[in-house]
Every structure is written in C-alpha cells, then in structure tokens.
Length: 130
Image (cartoon, rainbow, N blue to C red):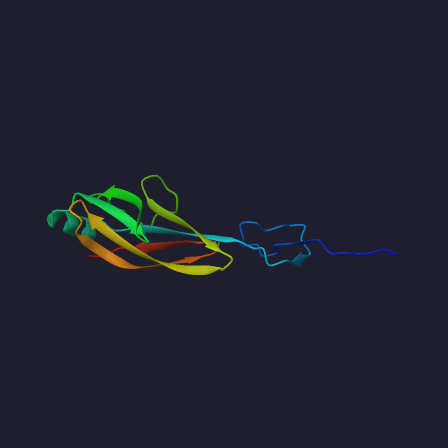
C-alpha cells in the first residue's frame, strides 16, 4: 500500500511562516503588520508653539517611540526609515487587527489619540494633523 500525503503548512504568502513547499494549509499561519506615524511642518510648528518639545508614542499603553516635536516629514516616510516611529505588531492568526494609540508631550499632555489598523504584511502610514 502506498500513501500519497500532501505536505501541510501555511500556504498564505502574507504570513510570516509561509511555506513554499506546503500543498495544504494546516491553519498555522501567523501574521505581522506595521504602521508608521508621522506629521508635517504645519503640525510641527503648532506643537512647538504650544510648548511641546518631545513627543512620546504609545500603543495599548506601552511606549513604542519618541521624537522631538520640531522634527517633521515633507511627505509620508517609508516604514523603518531612520528617525521614524514605526510600530510592528504581531497579529496572531488574523490578517488584520486594531490597537489604540496616543501621543503625549513631555508634560504628559495628550495631543493625539485614536486607533491604528494593522494589516498582514503591509505598512500603513498615519499622518497626525493638529
């Protein structure tokens, strides 16, 4: 008797554990997504005029980065670029997931609050406007 079994594994190309040799999906796929938070010159000028010098970025209450309030971008930067606030999140076995975020200045004043939507194998750019 000869058995022809198909190799199982993750067959979703967007997953972190995608298997090129898997012929049948076994439900083990895992996903990660990224967001980058940025703002332009006008927002930077308004933050500095309001007394902000340093901004701290939080996702689900945990610090994920910081920057000088005066530092801005002239357009949406790419995820992971030096000096950016890029957040990577493990999405588990789902392809998209939302997380809360906030941005506070050096005194703890909260300038921005909202929801970041992460999608598998992508980088979403979020512009802060104030």
